[in-house]
Length: 298
Image 1: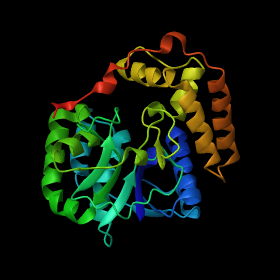
Image 2 (image 1 turned 180 degrees about the vertical axis):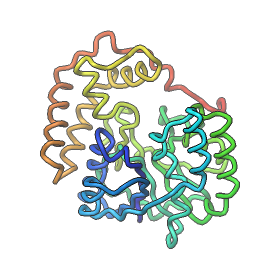
Image 3 (image 1 turned 90 degrees about the vertical axis):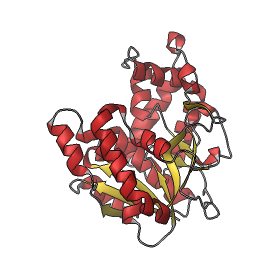
Image 4 (image 1 turned 60 degrees about the vertical axis):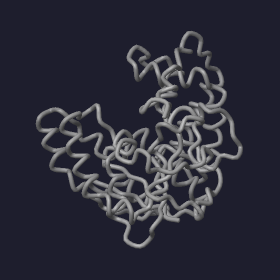
């Protein structure tokens, strides 16, 4: 099956680029997936690396880019968020297959996910924070029915533009998919979108570093992380309550990425060593946000 992921030019550097390398190399090692990148920006050394490692790169432009640029000019939005919306282009760019796999770049493949028998009416996804709560799904890993999403696309685009203008930063791609496809999405096994803070699961095919990523973990264990705002507190608490699990999955991600450039391998190895000696202490904050239910208990 084809595997789609998305980046803008800003994502070709730093932590996002590092996670992308882990995802691509682990997919090459452990799966039969065919990687396809939806990309916006200038080609560079990183996109060259992706192509050399078997990634088909598709230059892709959002049909509603004009609306986003207007918001940027009004200083109501940032182009740094552009890559998140590229997932909505999957149904526009894929021309042959009815079903394809989409994931964010902060994933590591532990074994082939065997997706050929999953045929959603529109899309299949797994829960966000609580693996037993199917009220609100994580849009970072999906199997999508390209043909059905393409039929929906004109209405979906209108919905996106309207809400981007009205809600701006309070509106995200994940909220969009959950609202627009409420009651129309199918359940994806949690093992295909397993989070480190759910604990160790040797049956998980894909580990999704949703929440604390390598850069944040490095900042936390070095004492550089800002725990004072809501986002910082949530990320810090997820890590502090699950240090051993993050240690395990970071080691696994490194093992599953043969061919990782030496500087990146050294970076992750350093973080792993620091995690092993880390004492979370008072950083174990409240995890009640993991009970978030977007649409009540229905």
